[in-house]
Image (cartoon, rainbow, N blue to C red; front, top):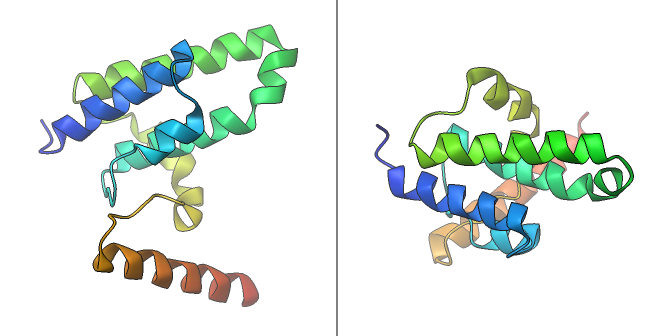
Length: 128
């Protein structure tokens, strides 16, 4: 079992809350564990972002909505058991890691982590 079991259980609750309509994706993202390095939690974070981005598609395509809801539910159950997400899921989201807007702790250290990350992203975009 990972030593961040509490964070995984908290994220599982957030995922279920979004599915049940008890909180918005934005609210869930704001409550997400800060400065996480757990790849399963980072992948779940990106899954939530994609879930929100596909809101219009889910409204038009009920089969897609059902599949996406099942996917978020699967992530929730896996994390609630304290297990790692499957490697293929984690790998699917790795391309988005650099641009991840994962929140940092509200400390001086957290501020600088976010600040330096934003500078690095801008630098990499300019050099591509």
